[in-house]
Image (cartoon, rainbow, N blue to C red; front, side):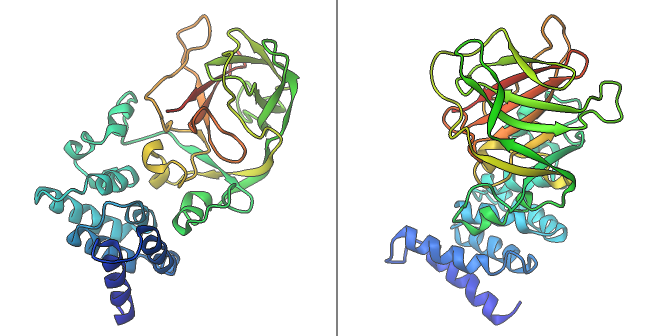
Length: 334
């Protein structure tokens, strides 16, 4: 490691300590500026920084947690060993352990995973260590909102390699809510939806009512256009603002490292707009059934960004059933 890098690590550790006389906000900003210089320069600096922060007891801060996302595979393996050794020495590294274990659970034994709340939720799946493939919705131009934090706007999940055509997200819908009479909000239109399956049709257009804060079902016709069916929605609150904001996204195959994303750990920092895979639950597992059956629905999730705001800033889970062509919209928030 270069002398200048070691000096930067010492500076960050010093600024994060309580010995500095400046405000916490000013010290945090200075640390961010230093770390930002190394986010795209390999992970040697970052792994040494994390270790130094733990050894100095100044690691319990979002800035250090976020650095885990930028480690390469070899440094992630090194961090897994370091954190488990630190935990055995009674160091308080619970949050860092959770960050690393979510991204690379194969590096941790079952007893470590069992202490992470999200893995308790994910035990509802047949094998939480081996998950179904999913895709991220990657916004053209990077993050949909202009985050001032370098570790947020540069997070790998906002910049995954995409494939295929772009999809429209946001804007006005085509239908009206039967409960309140307002125009539906357009969430996303997926062209050639279900290609290669027996239920393929030209497109699936997903729309919802901006007054819906409870599970709501929609039936889709042969052209993918939705019509609300009972139950409709609650008579209070507003789920989305502003409804008119439009964006363009592309699908990116999700690497194994990002198949598991915790809402509590990732919220507002990682890209939680996902198609399929494992839900990032806000309030715990809640899989709806197709009305009148015992068949679980497949899902898509939309985070509270890009003009969407679910309740107090949660996630909307849109579940889909190929056979009935029904979607269920289920928001969770704090």
